[in-house]
Image 1 (tube, one colour):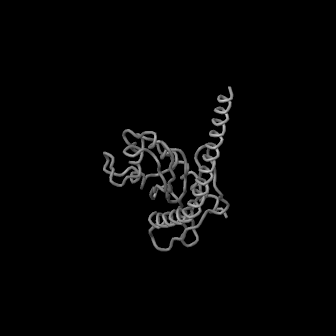
Image 2: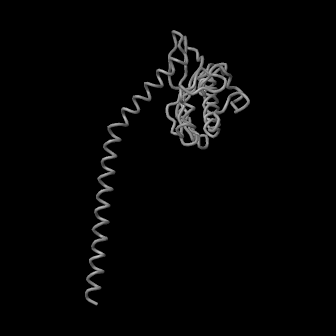
Image 3: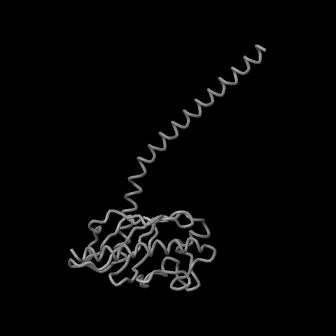
Length: 206
């Protein structure tokens, strides 16, 4: 009987020891991840800001444009879609267009920047983030992938009017085998363009 009790105590101590070791490893891992995040987050944010600045100049390449965040707009949640920011494109003091940074679910997650003129003409679409499946959803951001119409998925939106919204099969082509991603990106574009229209109206009234 004493041997059995001694064995039970040893098992209990071993379980406690293993639990403490695992807890220590978890604490160290969290601390390391925190340090890595502190070092990488500013660089990631700076890279994204640079990408947005470059994209705005591509959306509105003419001389004389200035870009600034829409006054009074501090982000907006539309269900699972979030409008991160709206940037207005101004020339000679007039708002002539803008861009919206939009995040939301795709097949996984995506963040886009969509540019639009005052009349609703889409100036371009850039992906700031897309974590969908390689070979399927990631084709949406693949410059080497072209649709049967000869355009990239993101390139097909340029020049189209966003006032009526985008619907697969009606005014844009979905990616075969990645309809979830295609429709989700269209939802992000629709939400972004609606927010640009709203911000342009509010800022033109001021």
